[in-house]
Image (tube, rainbow, N blue to C red; front, side):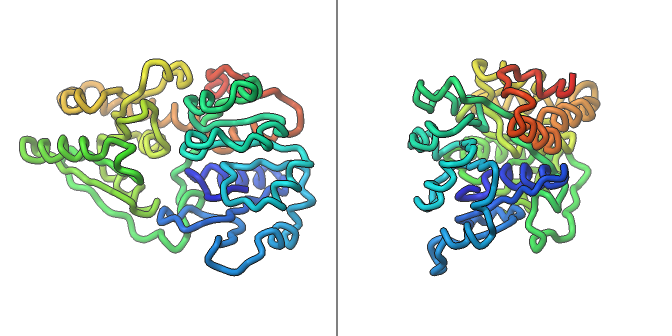
Length: 324
């Protein structure tokens, strides 16, 4: 359960576990997102006069053996009280943990705590870090698993020009304003197409990526986002800002790192060396993303943790080796 289907991670885990033969359901308690990911059970909050706790019992979620809670804001107290009595796993994504440090009572009760980016480990109180682990986000570009059905329309088509795209949800956190300056310059000086997708639904964002050769990710936090992985799954070249201290968590990451000051030069290098280097590496990029962020394998990994078959790992190369 979660306040929102954050980065589509809760839905993909639930879908993957169902395909593995488990009764796994994902409950969205708050959903007003324009992104339009697919959902399982939705309870609008607070617009409809729905007793949220009753939904919990109507869908027999009180009978679950395991609760995996993603960023639990908007989850009502009666539900939190109940899930705290069962086997509990906490899963934090971004802003909620950075601003609050998480919910201490649930962190204390949780068997393990998972985070979607490695920096989040250090926003937890030290007493909880021993049982906290970074796990790569599951990511897919298969429409029925990542887009609400009513948003899927005819795909857009690109031109023959070298094409650069950037998609973002929160511009001030992604370096979008600096990216815009660079894109305007490139459009004036080179024979390129540029595409910008700001606060559009997920299908539109994927279409923007699909038209490009080069995808520009985020340039503030020093990490890469789900959009970068989606671009890699399409074989696109990606530039983003990756801080050196986080690289050890992403072995073999095929993203070219540049900050906003070096972005223009990095793009020029990619353009000049496209035919000889970056273009032919497309399959390698797809293979890395489909291994490190594979939804089915990551869903299975969590199932094995629930079943006690494996302990969570701190070795990120595990997600490239899997069944070794």
